[in-house]
Length: 303
Image (cartoon, rainbow, N blue to C red; front, side):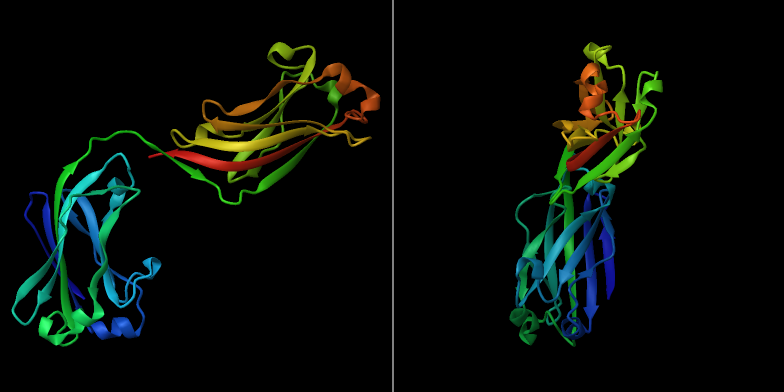
């Protein structure tokens, strides 16, 4: 397989590739062949050729052919690139190119980096000797690309919801409760939904609950390490375990966590009087247990 390309330095590119021993592609059931990269107005492209049709789109008895935009520009949905292109096949009998004109200007971006034809050409037409497309088991494909315009750089985001999310559980044992004189304490870091978390305990309360309530929060352990504009949608339950009667005190919520909003919980989770009452079973031998259940349902990232 060989290729030729000619760039007219004006946003246009002609790219050719020659395939020899085409029958072997079919016999070996090669799913697809991807050309080398080429450029048009600073953007990288490639051709993707399916000799037996694109099975993902239920194509049979046809060749499928697509133009694909590559590189960092293609990963930016806000950097939309508009292009007009033509596919063609060499008629080796007459030395002319048979052009498949793409009439419309197409927009290439992250959500749609490729355009082309599922049913580019039937095997019957392609292999008919009189058409000249396949001679001596060799053919020549090509594409003519003209980048017509580019959008200005903007901002965007992408929300990815988690299919079949998994609930992760972590239990934090807190000893020597009567000796805790700090404002807040953190559990060991644990992982849920590929994110690092921690439980936060305010033994003397927080905000409007200072002096009257115990406060409990769930928080991202390393919020500053998140990519720009990243947000994590999580469902969580914080549970203060009753070690005697199993009548646990709990709170449940959903929240979007981010660098600027990295924690969520209750500053009046339970009154200190109720919590410290021996008959309630929350504190036993100066020890309590806090359980966290975290399920990550979605992540928003910048584009």
